[in-house]
Image (tube, rainbow, N blue to C red):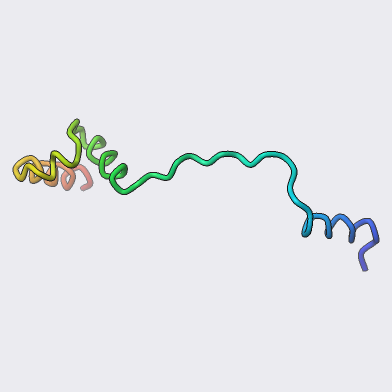
Length: 70
């Protein structure tokens, strides 16, 4: 059986509120941020929206990504 002091400290952990401040989290990354990171990883400096609208450049990017991942 736990001692009285141990029981009180366990109770305070379960019921008590933590002291101090909570650290701020970094903003969540969106799917479009991930696409931009992947495009830059391959070495392209264009925005993905511009690439999506240009069929020839998009095809070149897809081929570059496929050869980069192999």
